[in-house]
Amino acid sequence: LEALARRLGGEVQGRYKHESWRLGGLHCTDCAAKVEGVVGRLPGVAEVRASYALGTMNVLYDAEQVGAAQIEREVRSLG
Image (cartoon, rainbow, N blue to C red):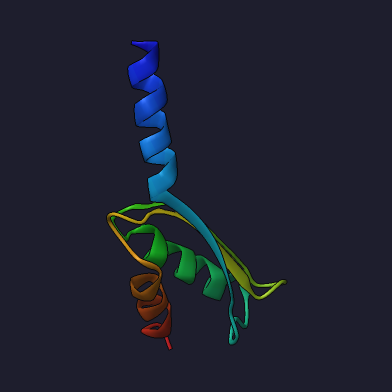
């Protein structure tokens, strides 16, 4: 059982990616919350944090379910 858990843990860890983006155009905390809501609803997104003060977005996601390009498209669609 321990060997199986180690093998599966390695597979899951390899699937998850953590990426950061610089975001322009965040004018307030509500904008950051909107970004978090849209990106957070994508399948495979485990965690998203958008910071109005820093102009950044950090996302932890399952690369087998969603990709960086799809995340970027969703953010761009917000305008």
